[in-house]
Length: 303
Image (cartoon, rainbow, N blue to C red):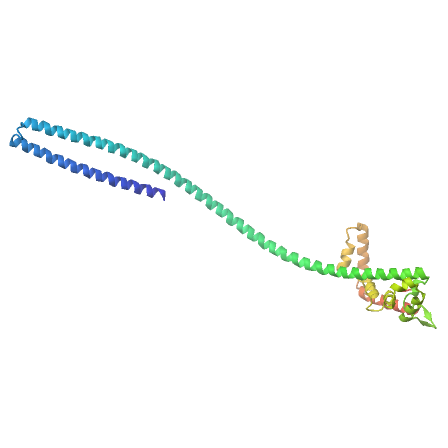
């Protein structure tokens, strides 16, 4: 810390002052010895033909000069010490101010560190929430992807049926054949309904060359055949079947009015009721396909 360092410096200064004091005491001892010497000389008589008074004055002059030199030296030393003490006081004040600033800065750092820890905790919590949200979104995306794939499959089946219907209607309009006769069993030959192969041969015999170029036997079979497993059958299934989720989305279409949505909900409730004596939707669809087949066989317009 800054303060112990300043005190250590002052202690060293005090030691130096003590050394100077000891030196001054040694000089004082030397002066005492000199005074004793002078007294001895005075008592013993003249030295170098000088009277005792002259000897005393000479020694007193020497002592005065020494004292003045020492006094001047002490004054200079005192001035230096005062300057050094002043410098030390300024250094101590600077160190104290610096220490106060360091403590204040340290307090700010601790406060900032606490804020960072709190922010880190918030970020960790937010990160956990984002991970959970990401998991939910991932699950939702997978579900939407499955639904989209299902809808794409259904739409493709419907669009293929539209293409086949357009071709059948065009054949009917171009060659004057009723649409109900462009189905297996739609015409009767020798008291029996025409088979698919007979229908294909009959229509091919009427085709112009340019149409026959495009409509080979497999194409005509695809247009006419609605038996199980055919493309037309798949389109029929897509047109007459829908999951509860598909129905829910269709009924709640934002493009519908509130009245239309309410009416569709009532119709949906009616078609899905499970009272005794009523059939569910899947059973009704199966019966519709069966009735379609029976009507074709007996040369009636299918449902």
